[in-house]
Length: 177
Image 1 (cartoon, rainbow, N blue to C red):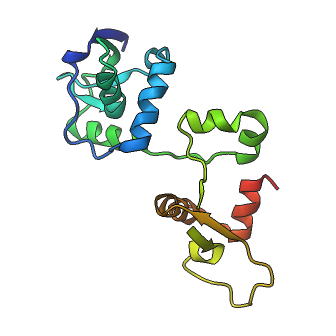
Image 2 (cartoon, rainbow, N blue to C red; image 1 turned 90 degrees about the horizontal axis):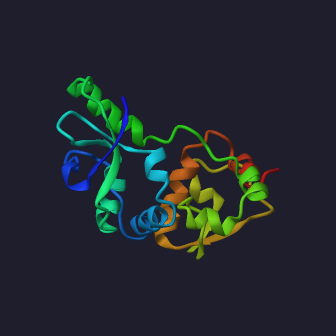
């Protein structure tokens, strides 16, 4: 498979791609491509033999928003329809976790946010007990309360539920302790 630079009009969005991007995240993606267009060649859009997107639907949408004339693609003609569906999902699944301690010490936090890494924005009273389905039997003497916007509150709950650690262990990991 080789990387090709083709007219953007020849690439078809995948109407059955279940991944969406909206509002602020889409604006960040557009800005990301605008600020670092070389990334598009390093991570081309993957298409099938019909030039329909298998991986990079949102990047294509952002490139269209920027009115780019050409995009880089990799064409795969050998995947079966079932493999194409599998690719669409697996290409969008995030398997790893962030090493927050390393990010905090080796990267500029403002740049991370600018590059699209979701950082916690503080604004709705919520205790850590509310992040988990079960509450400790023993009463807590020390309590931490965080404030989130409604939108970020939902994101944080989903992120915390991905961890099997206790709430304290999750917080310690996030703090790099």
